[in-house]
Image (cartoon, protein in one colour):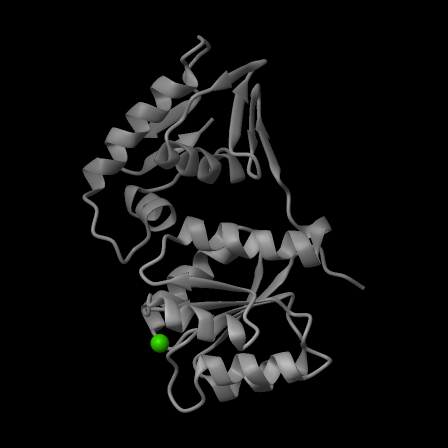
Length: 229
Ligand code: CA
């Protein structure tokens, strides 16, 4: 029986990066299994193949590339999409990563939102029923695929950061997000951004959401952060 929550195997030896990513994937409705190294990853896949694998390139002992190569040569696991994470950005490395059979490749430091979008894109291909593409809140509709946002029947103009902020809010209406959590989700933890930047973009998002009128749907929660509704 197919579970309605897609399962992700997250292979990352850096504990902080692993935890941030696992937290965000779980908040997004994924069931996450974590592995710290390549051997553990291969063992876990043998036990139960996940819907998708997020795989760090640089791992102790068995590298991410080797894990990818092994999984892509076995018929039972060949169909599981693999997204490789790497600090390397050279084109030659990218080509090498894709040659091992990786389905996608994300360079560190990455924004968590971008990585999640790549995970969803892979699942849309392999498990389309598990990923929603359209988010709705009251009269606001966000289409994750076309990046269009409408309110009522009018299109809203939004900058890319405001779009990512809004999609975070619309995934969990009512949930209060701290500035730090929004930084992790929208900007990515590896990039240093002052928490005041969050306030600036929240201000822009509020203005954008009300550009054709209507009341401000965002709520400031004193000492805690922001919520939609
Ligand atoms: Ca690593």
